[in-house]
Length: 403
Image 1 (cartoon, rainbow, N blue to C red):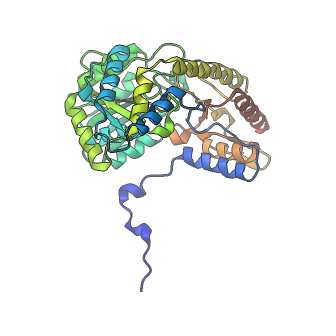
Image 2 (cartoon, one colour):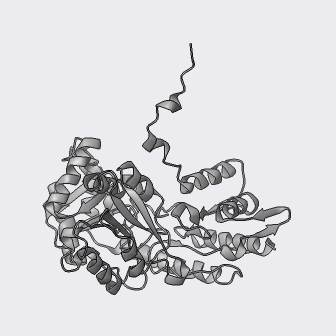
Image 3 (cartoon, rainbow, N blue to C red):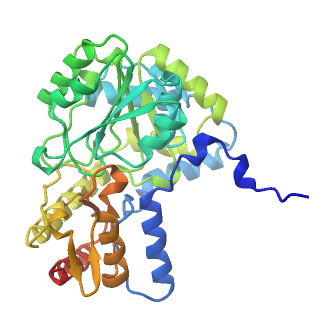
């Protein structure tokens, strides 16, 4: 009897998806730590704060009150209403409660949006550098990624002319992540207006706006593109509670859109999963309706860390750093260190650099290639000052060793 290879049963779409480099690097760092190596990890984009106590109490009380059963597929009405109010008041997005769909994390909202709007062969403009998961989600939904790249020269934001050149009759979505993971880039209101004008000139084009980092800003509060004239009907806004409220493990995200799009995304969610965790939604309700003191305190801490890590990076020869106006990431260009050697080891690209940096200097980072931006690395400053200082000191030592 011929042995069966289970791998032969995998779908083409599944086989085409690669393991995220972020996960791979974090796993390597954990393995080294398990072996007793003193590793500084600046990889994972997760707040190093605990979820605020009031939110935890609300979820505990909800469990004790019976919120342990299935929740409505699009979410509890009171939470949808609270999110809609916040989006109206703070973001000027004119969404009603029925336009809000709760999900099992913002990542599911992105997936819902892609499956609700994309047919096979529809093109999705993705502005590199972009979050590693985007490409896999788009491909799973049958979409075709069209990558428009930007570098440090334009603060990691492509020009409107670049985006315009990428649009054609097959374009269905423009995936906009502002503030951006991995670069921290923020599109200004003027830039968003120019993008909106471009969208209006293409009748079938929508914007999928990932705004998960909107509350972690340092210079000017970001603008939501859905707030601009005529853009609410053309935009699916995605957000969640993971970053601003330090609720990554709670898995509560949401989308906001006009009703036809919202209903379609709810239908997708009902097909793949169901409503989000019942008591976690009650914690989210406490988060969005309660005082924002903890959110503001975390934002100020990230601001301090941004200033610290940027000042340390700018002192390292061969590294070019753009100060991020938002998020808890910095995305230095290390192309000036590539093509050099340390002893018998020659470093040709950012992937080799990150592997060498981890193995020889015990600093875990993520290569820019994971975000379609080779020649850069991503550093997360969702870490304490001591780890930031120690990690950047190791990076400086590594840079000095390359000749």
